[in-house]
Image 1: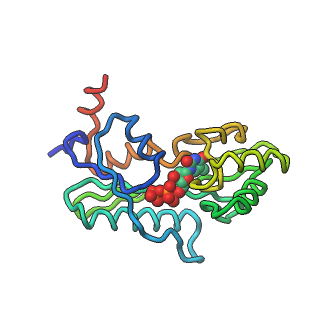
Image 2 (image 1 turned 45 degrees about the vertical axis):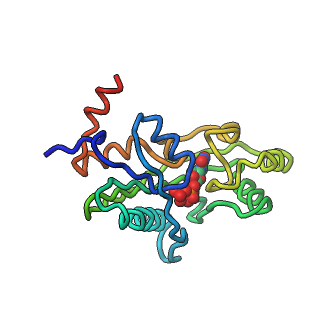
Length: 202
Ligand SMILES: Cc1cn([C@H]2C[C@H](O)[C@@H](COP(=O)(O)OP(=O)(O)OP(=O)(O)O)O2)c(=O)[nH]c1=O
């Protein structure tokens, strides 16, 4: 039996406004149920392994209460020379993160976890990001905008942070928190078809 995405109860296990906006952009109907699992992971894990572990725990946490739904969770980390930059706690931390990113290349990793009826699929996507050089004043001005605080690496590529980024290699939506093409491939792997939804949108 083919599962059609538009016939499924979809639960987005995330409090991220970006992830909600991106799924809405696909025309999907879904509920939003953020999970509260801690986002730290053991130091012996690589950043990618850590993101995969956190995304899986977010999805499984919510899937326990929605056993018949397709649960989608994600975790985004900014990786600079194998170090993870998470969400800054205050202005000083945001300033420090942006100073480290300035004039250099880093990698954004987003792990996606999909759970449906006792099956969980987890995968990660990587995008390279090149930041322009920034003066102390540039960084202070950006931090003062307040965009940094709920975002990994203290910037948002989708908003004014666009002006910090010279170029990227890979999926833009991955940097924003949800790689949509990768999501579609994972759904295919789970046996979920997007065809009816796709045709209805044309
Ligand atoms: C690098 C980058 C990150 N982000 C955001 C995406 C994610 O919301 C956030 C990374 O934090 P996450 O822990 O992945 O997600 P979250 O805490 O916002 O939401 P939840 O755990 O409930 O799913 O950073 C941007 O919006 N733009 C960017 O350019």
